[in-house]
Image (cartoon, rainbow, N blue to C red; front, side, top):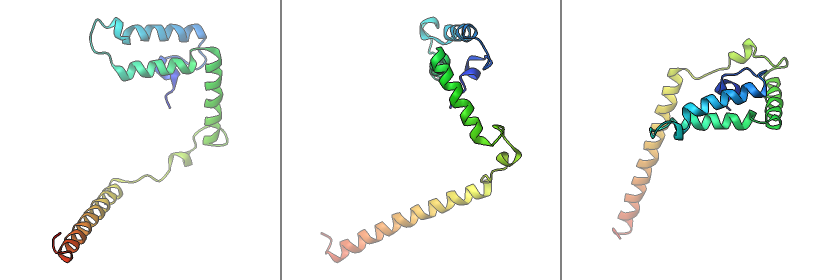
Length: 128
């Protein structure tokens, strides 16, 4: 999920006027009508519009802030990341490579088995 405050380059404690000003400045830079016919960065423009939808009016902003605080409370009891949260087991390069190789081998076995069954079935039916 995007953080609209990061997208708009404002603090979460920013006033509604500061958020509106940041949005207007950014929309002028990214809006297709203001780019003089050049191709806009569509992803940045869409992200900006999505950020505005989340914090553009008081009700939407309060709902976003409430969901944001409840989500951060779910990370740990204090609402902050702990060292244990950062030490989740991740696949290293060797494990990732082994998984890819196992997938390729399985795929080849399935395809070759299907081919063998097809050939055996055709030979038993007389090629029909």
